[in-house]
Amino acid sequence: MSVDERELRADARRNRQRLLEAAQTLFRERGLDVGVAEIAEAAGVGRGTLFRNFASKEDLIEAIVAERMYEAAAYGDELLRAADPGEALFDFLAHMVGRQELDRALFQAIDETWLSKPVIRPAHMAVFGVLEQLLSRAQEAGTVRRDVGAMDLLMMFKGACHAASAYAHAEPAAIERHLDLIRASVRPVPGGPPLRGRAPTPEDLGFPRQ
Image (tube, rainbow, N blue to C red):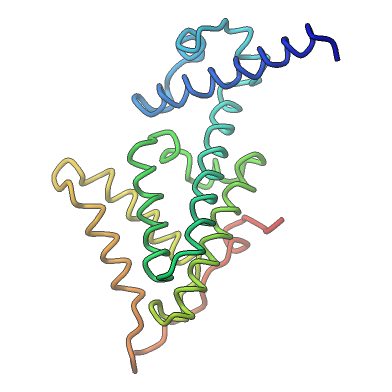
C-alpha cells in the first residue's frame, strides 16, 4: 500500500469517527429526529462523505447503538471480577440506566424494532450474555433468588428506564427508587412461594442466540 493510500484510509477513518461523534452529540441533545445535513455539518464533512460511510441515517443510528451496547458489555465483563457479585449485578444495571439518561438515542432504540436489526442484535446479545453471567454469580452468592432469569431483569430494567423518562421531572430520584424496587423484588425470601411460570428467554421474544 502506498503512502497516499494509507493517508486516504486514515482520513476516511477520521471522517467516520467525526460523523459518529457528531451524531451522538446531536442525538443525545435532541433525539433521533436530527437531519443528516445537520450531522454532516457538525462533523465538518459533506453529505456525500456521510453517505459513503453510512448508506442511511438508520445505518448511522445502528452503528452508534451497537457501539454503545458493546461498551456496556465490556463494562459488565470488568464487573465479573468484582469481589461482591450482588453489588456487581446492580452496578451493571445502574450503569445501563445512567447511559439511557445520557443517551436519548440509545434509550429510543431499545425497543424490539431496533433490537432486531442485524447490526444491533449481536451487541444486544453481548449485553444479555454478560448480564446472565453477573446474575449467575449473584445467585451463587445467595443475593438473588434462583428462579429469576436474565430476561426477567432486562424486562424490569426496561420498565425502570421508562419510569425515569416519565417521572424524573417530578422526582429526580425516580430511577434510584425503581432500581431499589428491582433489587428488593429479586432478593431471596426463605420459605417464600416460587415464581409462577418460567423465566422468559431471548428466543421467546424473537432474539435467537447466534
